Length: 477
Image (cartoon, rainbow, N blue to C red; front, side):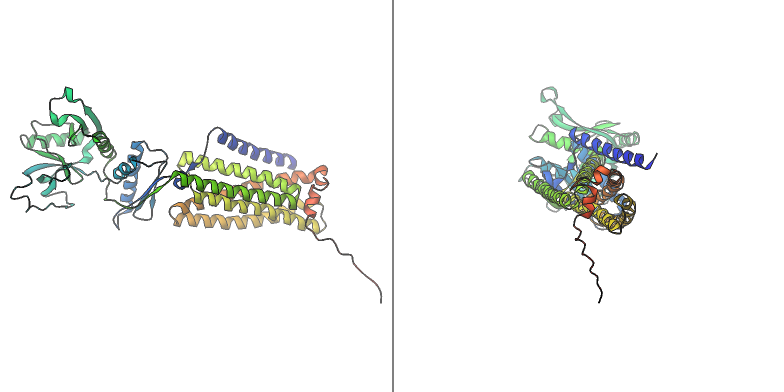
């Protein structure tokens, strides 16, 4: 393929990519907007200092599974530093906010223990009994009963050694039992049924065989949820009653417990070190201001380039439009495939890279002017001008990309979004410059009509801004 054919193919290839990006945007492919643009809730969960990285990774995956199980759309869950997990959920708030925050940070440590003694409030031993908070799995503990009415003291249970943990559970589900069809008051309303793994089922049968006629406590997060009497060996399945299964909020409580049992227990205790709610109104205002800033800057840049570089300015218009379409398309694809959310900081990265992209065009045009001043024709000046300009463009853009990579690796939060959009936009700028601007200017230089177009042609563009030549005065003494 000859040089002209290669240039045409390159331009068409870039136009097809840009067209595909525009088509996707028209068909509904949009960037996922971050919390600061659409509103929502953000929480930072902090683990104890020194928590090993594998434990943090497991904790993050457990939280992700819980959020997905609730059905929350577009969550952004990531590790921040060594012991922090940031959970950002756009378009989420209201009454469900507190419930979700409680759910994602819940340890959900499930234990089965023998009840050695029940200590009711008011008994002589009650005031002397200390409620332990030991983290040891073995040995006796004293734990309170869950769901005690407000203003009343909880029943205390002295419990024996740990017999089985929630890791033996393979499935859990919230179930509603109609009071008209159930005679046992303790099984009316909402409860949580669970099924064991094969190994857990065998062990559970051994435990319930040994505890026949005795009480077995089901402990969740260091509180006794229920303490039923074992009437016969149980194999494979059981149920957890949550106080009054007919009370308001019983369904939500049962479904939350279903989620945490189904998705697993958190391996560490987490503390909510930061909780932030962003209003949707503030997010829309931020987005509108960011877009307005970008549009004003783009219009000002377009007018300047057209005035100073004539036809080359028009080439820049098309190049910047193609670049913008590719940037939006790539950000949209990353949102759909990798869950990347565009934040206000990310918008700032795109706006800044707009100037970087414009600078790439200007460097080429100024090199072209230099070659023409040396006495070369416009057509002969294009190749060496681009070769010199390309080295400068690559050097400058590589520095920007490396800075973006370092910033992305070392920063946390929205700063990483800024670094990502800045780096990707700069890479796309190099792509458009090489595969669209370069061949387009080469093709224009080969056209006598476009080169000599009065006031707008390529010759006018490279002559624009030059000082008028001064006459050379000579004479004899």
